[in-house]
Length: 263
Image (tube, rainbow, N blue to C red; front, side, top):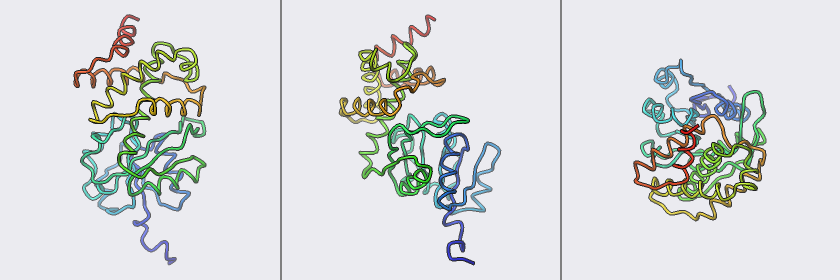
């Protein structure tokens, strides 16, 4: 037997959630020669973990609202080899699993369409290189960051981009290019409310202009990207719930929510 195939478990990757995003990573990992074991809603993770107790990586590719219930169910033998890619992700969301790999995904994948990158996806953690290599095999740019603090900034930047575009889009619709060229004042007001929430949730202060500049770089990566996805109303409600819990005034978000209620 060839040397590289003596113990496939050392190369195997488990992917929990084979939606659009999970499928992209699975394809890239397969291209890099890693056997991929999918976990779907009908799978028994604990049964698979009994057969495959030491995969190289367990990629949790479920949606953000399913992350916490999924983490609760992760078999103990897998908990020290997790990778997370969800939107609206912050360190408090993965405080329990030891030393996970985290990637902030900056490419879009819709059903029936090729993946479309906006900017390189930053990754941090023990298996960041594996994820970066997998994406490179699909011509999707990614890069490693060198510290937890740097990754925190990247996670907040992605949250600012998603929440600002989605929530502002509830009011004005259109594309991200149009949002900035025609409604910059609104975009900045929403972004500042979002950053207030992010700072309160993390206990950190961030360079607001650096976050705005990063958001604009992503805008330039795809100016025709639609602001308002189907998750926008739920994102607004979650943001307001966080603000209420933290005792924050977020006047622009409240105004947009009132306008939505009125219609």
